[in-house]
Amino acid sequence: MSHALSQKALPKQAEALLSGRAKVTTYESTGGKTTAKFAQHNLSLIPPIPAGSIIHDNCTGSGTVSRLILQQQPDVKIYATDIDQPFLDVLSEDAARNSWPVEASNQRSEKTNFADAFFDYDITNIGVIFWTGGGADGVKEVYRTLKPGGTALINCWQSITWMLPIFLVHKQFRGDAAFPAPPVNWTDGQQLRRVILEAGFTEEKLRLERQEVQSVVPAGEFREWVEKTWAYLAGIGGWHEVDAEKWDEEVDRLAEVLKQQPGTTVEGGNVSMKASQWIAVVEK
Ligand SMILES: C[S@@+](CC[C@H](N)C(=O)[O-])C[C@H]1O[C@@H](n2cnc3c(N)ncnc32)[C@H](O)[C@@H]1O
Image (cartoon, rainbow, N blue to C red; front, side, top):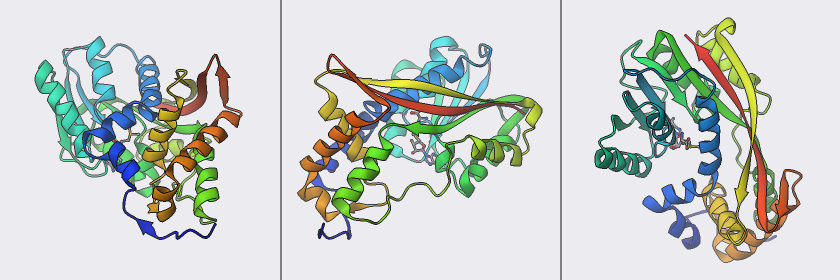
């Protein structure tokens, strides 16, 4: 392909799906459905959260973890942090409207303003992969701010059916430069284990498990799901001139490749795609 590969502004097709609040809806109707399944499962791995607990919903997004906790235990105090303000705004408004005990603030996980030994729980649902130092800098902060005896839940992707198709469409339309994936490989769970132990947690109090979920997109909604997923993920590392020019072709090709993946099944028009996580449950 001879298309220019220079970094470009957001294509208008992606802009419509990613500007302000639209970004939150786009995330929640695609990858967010899967991360919510992970969060639900992970909360079931620990005993019920006692009343009065102080909780860090770390890398909260728009509060998926906070919302799940409040369904089972409303008598808690949750500090929800993230660096993406539109997501925090959605959570803050919902918290105010429903009088939830949730305080949302814009803070980097690697350096927060919380005191040492402040939290009973730190729950980071698909956040560690974004932290500096290959995750280590944020996990150290989790350790510092957790009370002795407190529990952390930290998970990372193991595999996602839609990532390889995104790399393939990237290569087909944008040329040979590698898709800028995270420099660290999280797929075997060993990076997660390593950064947790390096932060000061001990092997005896660490439980590391794998879990698989299905992301099911109902018949008739698949093209829209694919377009939103392309908009959300294809711009990692920048957009290219060809993206605006050939947007529909890219999305159609992604849909086609996705349906051919070993992790995908199509039944009655419903498209089911596999995603899996490594989850660490660890006590300080
Ligand atoms: C995959 S989303 C997960 C959101 C939410 N926990 C959920 O379950 O849907 C990752 C979130 O981490 C946030 N994030 C990435 N790097 C961060 C950092 N260094 N400090 C705080 N938040 C960060 C992003 O803004 C994004 O909202």
